[in-house]
Image (cartoon, rainbow, N blue to C red; front, top):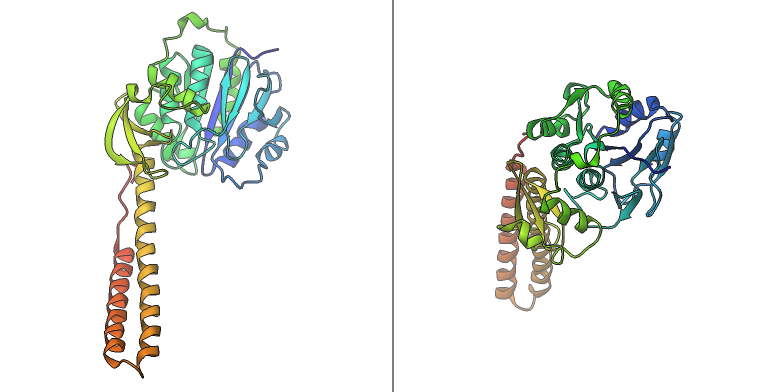
Length: 335
């Protein structure tokens, strides 16, 4: 049987405990399919399905591309792959990273909104920054239900708080309350697809990009305008997309950022550049000092100039090191 309702759940830092709490209490008779994205390293062993299997009786498996979407089944995104939905089946892709993650939450939520409309239920759990906010906004816009873990119940409250800040959420509840709420919502009469508002152009384009289609072909330039910022992943121009009063960014390669995740990436770039400068200056200091020592007996003037250059490199490295210690990272909205 193909699922006619879909629950999509997104989590990041602290998410394993919240997911175990939820999956433990989901009955295997739930009349909906459940898809889960947890932020993880590309090198992750993908042990989440096994952890969740031990938590409860509902069937839990790693999602694979083209798999039938069935009720009473929990599908987990594999490491380094986006999890999406098409009518009646799953898509597992290597589309561009969003918010520096693959899998990311927003691609799953957008595709759920497109395919299931008012029969999609989105759940944002604990985590840092704001992945899931844009996707939950789309679910709500297309008639679905928006649920957020109570920030006071979340180990890391930023993701729930950002969702509440930008989305007219329907329910804010602790993780322990979510299973019974899902059972209640999915037991209600199926809502007709005709009630669905047409998906905005950016939703269609961004879903296609996550499915590995060419951003130029799907019309990225039509849904955004060039910004003065470059992509931290590929250095391409970031297009600025306005959505629900928020600004987001996507480059021509397809990488996507919110303002907060872009600021976080910029902070990492600044730290990397400053540390690279210290390393290069230290190497220059050591090399010029070594050459100066070798020249000392043959060319005293050249040796002295190299020693002075070595000292200058040392002072500059020390100055940058001080800046690194004193630097305040650019704050995100949460900070």
